[in-house]
Image 1 (cartoon, protein in one colour):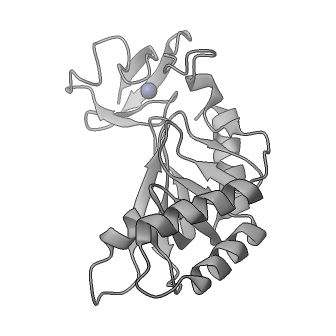
Image 2 (tube, protein in one colour):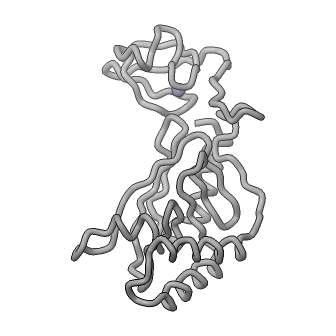
Amino acid sequence: MNPKHASNCEELRRRFEGREAICVEKGALRVRVGNIRPRGGFHIGADVEEIPTPGLGVGMFHRLRPLGVGPLRWTVRAGYLTTFTAQSWQMGYGGWSFLFTPEIVEAAVSFAARRPENSDPDEGYQELCRLLRDLEIHEPAQLVFPDAVEQGSDAFRRSNSPPIGVQMLSGWIVCPNCDMRFKVSDPRRWDGQQHTTCGQRLMIKAT
Ligand SMILES: [Zn+2]
């Protein structure tokens, strides 16, 4: 992986691994974020587990909760537009955000505890959004994969670096530019010269 991308992934993991957050995506839930790891192809993923909290989740998370089962658990995967700050991680292009600021987590938990039982989950989400907007800290956000983003347009920037030599193992290649594993027999990934996902040109050495 590009060393800058690798160090950003590591920094993101170091800041947020195992920490509590408020997850916001058309709803809000208190969660713990763990197993943060790069996924290849300019993706980074994590496992998310709900921390059951009276009055949360609101909005979409209210509807997602099946009755009578334990905490919600899911995995997230963020792509090349994902950003992070000292206390938050955003999927980018309008997806989820994790807000790790302890004061924000506390405020959301105490807001939820004050919600009357059977109150409307969508109104609850709107109210919580207003509260979060007041508490929001406008820290500078940084891209996790800056070299993959075209400045100004946010379009994916394909690699125009010179060809890199790679070893093929049983028909598989790990792209040294984006860390994605692909088969050279897959025309969607390999056009004979470049890894079509990221545009990196490769010189394949058969073992
Ligand atoms: Zn690639």
